[in-house]
Image (cartoon, rainbow, N blue to C red; front, side):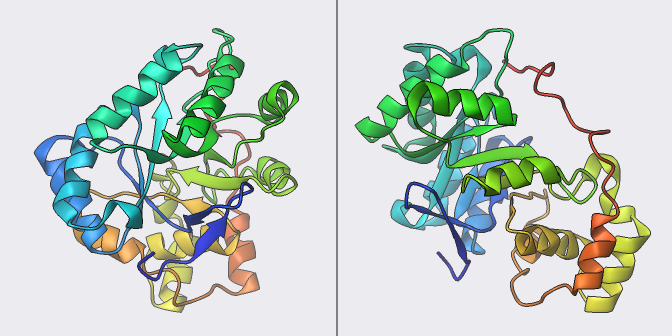
Length: 277
């Protein structure tokens, strides 16, 4: 996939080791941004029904001129589309907006425990995978006990859990849980914009040492830890720059220095209380 390494999924598939997030980018400008990113080499494109930009993602895919089979498109089931039958309706709506016959990966966006529907949703996603509407299925923002419930109910583990993660929110225990079950850890907001990660002196110092940008240093920390980051910038040149993280490595000391930025769960959106529809 355009020279980008891949990670193996527990169902035997493969996913690019870095991708493009799309949240908050919409409309004609969003479509142009996504098309340019694909032209620049991105092959994993992450969207969601809740982002309200699947039409723009679909247009960007079309305008890029890259064949559908060369792309790995992820979308997510919104909270309002959880439950029996509603899940099918939600995914079919995403496919229509994206203008594709299938997506490569479908995630449950948030567990939304107050509704108690994520088990039903998971069962239906398994059926949708069997129908070929999605090649792989996973979750987003799930905790270990919720993932264990999915396995206990259906015998099927998610291939991936997309979580809030960066050196400042390192989630080591959750990453270890994933690793023990061959679940890929995918990071949203991997550059920690809300926590001013790129403004940290240690990031700036390491960037100077290796001759790279702070963003490249942080993304390299992720891929070197086996984490799949999905950054996005409104500036095309920054998106292109973010792909250039496979031509250098951080030393053990540099990795440890970045690990020391971890603040535990201080900034984590708790999926037991944070719900989205």
